Image (cartoon, rainbow, N blue to C red; front, side):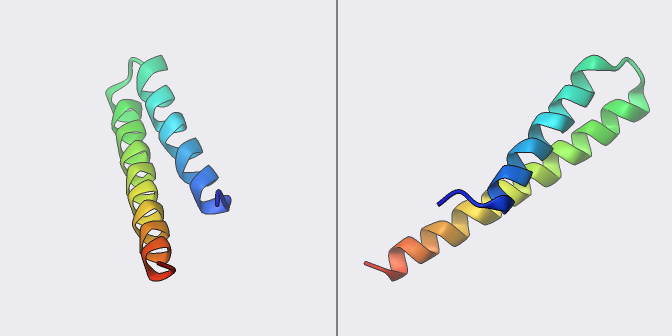
Length: 58
């Protein structure tokens, strides 16, 4: 089930990638890279927790 954590993670990745794409400043590209990485970590955490819950219900 999609919840708030999933939506925040997807928005975080999209914002980070968008920030890297639209700017020419290296500092902002670095911030966008970090934001996208945090979003990917959130997504991995969400997928692992959902997978664990699905396997527990089998």
